[in-house]
Length: 130
Image 1 (tube, one colour):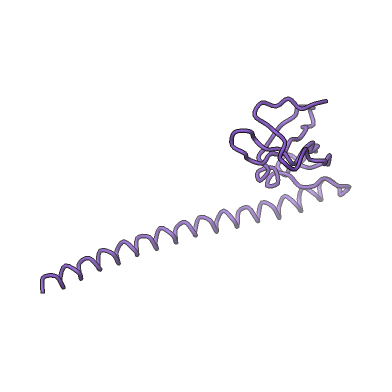
Image 2 (cartoon, rainbow, N blue to C red):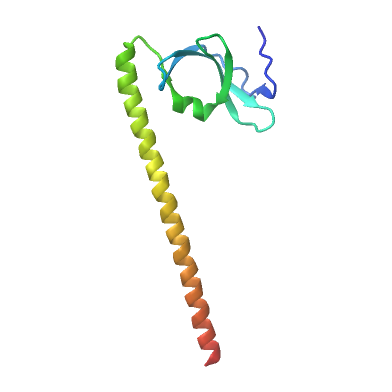
C-alpha cells in the first residue's frame, strides 16, 4: 500500500526498511515504526512515519520521535515504563537545565563584551584628547 502523505518524500537513501515496535514514554502504548528514512519535501526535515495503536498513521520529526519513544521489547510494561521513562526524563531535564544555564552564561558573556567595548571606546576617547 503506497504512502500518500502531502509534503513527504523518501530520502535519497530510499524508504526505510524498518518495521519495529516502539513504546511511548508518556502513555506506555506501543507504536509501529513504518519508515525511518523519510524527508519533508519543503523543509527537508528528516521524519519517522509510524502507526498508532488505533491504526492511524503519523509522521514526526526524527529527533522528536527518538525523544518520545523507546524500543518496545519483551520487558514487562511496568519495568520498561518506570526504568526507561525515569532515565529519559532525567536526561531530558538535565539537558534542559544545562541549556538554560548555557544561555544565561552566553548572555552574561555578551554583556561583558559590551562593557569591554564601552571601556575601550572611553580609553580611545581619552587618548584622543591627550
